[in-house]
Structures are given as C-alpha cells and as structure tokens.
Length: 129
Image (cartoon, rainbow, N blue to C red; front, side, top):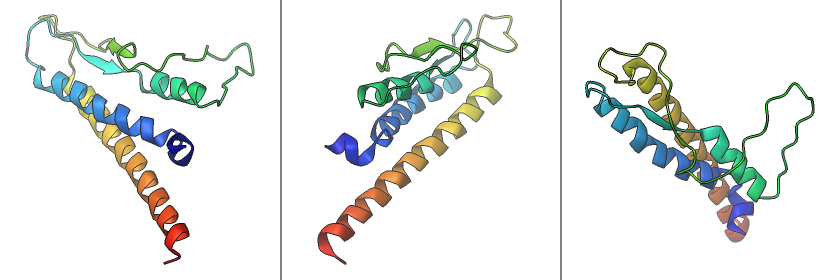
C-alpha cells in the first residue's frame, strides 16, 4: 500500500541517496591514476520500478530505443565513458561529476518534496485540520 501512496518517488529517493555516494567517490578520486568513474543508470532503476508497480512501458514505434529493464541498483552501476580521457587512465572529469552531483541533488529534493506534500495531504484528510 505504501508503494501506491508514494508512487515511484520512494524508490527515486533511495536511488538518489545511493547515487550521491558513488558521485562523491568519483569526485574524491579525480586525481587517482587509473580510477574509473562509475554511475548508476537512473532511468533504468526507475523503469524497473515502474514495471514492478504494474505500470507497463511499451515501444510505440520501431525507431524508439529498447526499454530499460531491471531494477537492481547493483546491476545498474556502470562505468562512465569519458569525453576526454586522461593520460594516467583516470576517467573522472570534474565538471561532468559536479553537474551530475547537482542534478542528483535536484532529483532527491524533488522526490522529498513530493513525499512531504503527500504526507501533509494525508494528515489533512485524517485529521481535518
């Protein structure tokens, strides 16, 4: 029942919380030789959640990309392909990581705001105040 109350926002909140650790690790290792940047496939995580919740996603045109499947955050952790690899084998690009970190913070705050408003509306419905 909780899934139906919060929708995908509960899973999105957990995924964003897990992702912040991965992005912070990437940023912390920006100067570590041979460190490979990693990130979650956020769209894949949410697509798996939507499928599990009974929301089916379908391709409406043969030219569309195949749908992401899965839902396990471990399976969705991928290595990032750098735009400009460094000579020491490090694939972390600080501006890219900082942008992904900011994007993740916005996703987290959006899901948190949705859940907070949902709880407030439920409290209003239950108490009438």
